[in-house]
Length: 338
Image 1 (cartoon, rainbow, N blue to C red):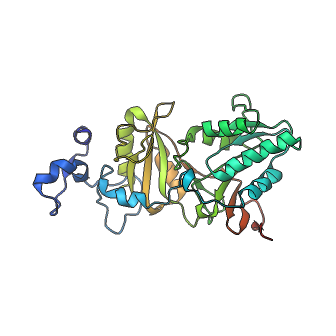
Image 2: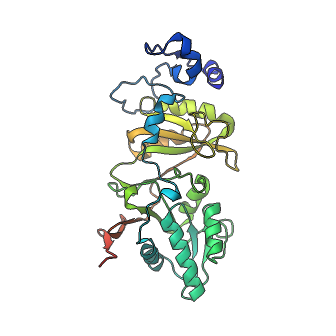
Image 3: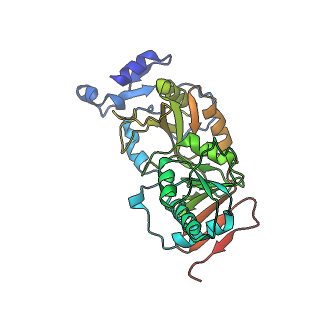
């Protein structure tokens, strides 16, 4: 019934899809599949897909198979065990962190958590002193506390000497290293607002990722944080802008759910929902243009596209470690087997 109420309240009406495969008898049992938006001209100049502009709207469950095949970061129990995590963490700490620093710390990847652990080890040994951590999540706060790193906040330290966190995708072909963050849902949901504040406050912000997260072009899911009181209106506006190129799903608190987020949608402490703006493949336009379009929607609070914020991406693979940065000459590669 939620879908029908939404349809009746919007300026652009919905209509029942005429699908010869579906009989009138079973139409009521799959209402979400049968609601289709009438074509509207998008407010943002984005290419249409090869099937034309008209598409099933954001409530279509026919997107489920595609959505499950996206490049979404895996949960911790699915992460590959890489024997080089410890060595890579040591290189990150020795290269970027010095005594007396205030460091923004994320814990959204195993490499991040290995870095936190090694910082704590060096503090206990006395080789690092007076390090303070500004955690980007409750998990990061827990990891830092367990490692013996004193915690502080952006209120007390509005400028950070260094910050690190994970990322879901890093574009290797653009010099400014744009990244997508916020897809990972386990072990905790992301806090995009705090993550962006930490990245902006840092003198140097580095993302720590596996090689699989480095891509030729950003694409797939772009999380969008929205006001939960008007999330349906925000979803409609995003749907109008990206018609033909993306579907929109409200994120559940855990697991998977229908497009509206199920009975337990994710709600942050600030009363925000998360919409997953899911593109079919690579972003259809430049990341900067996608950002402008999202930020121009009333009720869109934040998003997972971080542009012009990353100093370097430290990546780890089965063969070793490398650093990607527009500020470094070439690419540093360390082979741990050598």
